[in-house]
Length: 223
Image (tube, rainbow, N blue to C red; front, side):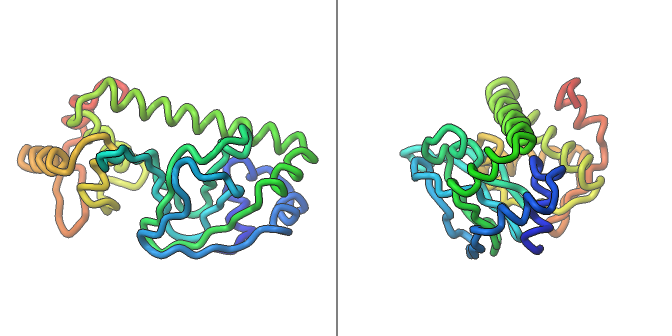
């Protein structure tokens, strides 16, 4: 995807005119990352705003014993790294390419100068930041208030709602476990349980949701 088209898909830039978008591109540069390549680590200085042009970027935090918590996966047209742009702090999470990826990096000072010159863009950025905070609060709620089978059921329902009843499982069981705050063995065991119950069919990396009502009953009333 071309840089200008990708910027138009960024949540807080959707209503920005072409002049603003082109001004953001004046000092932007393109980066390429191979699968497994780390863009930055938690605690490193923020160099600017990243926009995904192609590929998928995994955002995560890890503990001293190697346990990971996936915060999210950003794909084409998504932005990465807004928070430290505003508070001046370091990166709050690490970012790694899940697939070969291409990104746009808009330097921090240049981004802020454009932002301050356009108050409407500032407001849109703050709204986007609020949405991200709400998503993080939802993640905290999922991990702290719901058991693992509930989380997996909710994940499958969300994927089916967004992508159709049959969809490709984008993650390995280990990656999905990291995203849902558990371990690979539990994910494998739970998916097998759902399969044997006839709630889902899994074949060649494809998941088909067969019994949505059963998953919804397990996931809870919110679904």
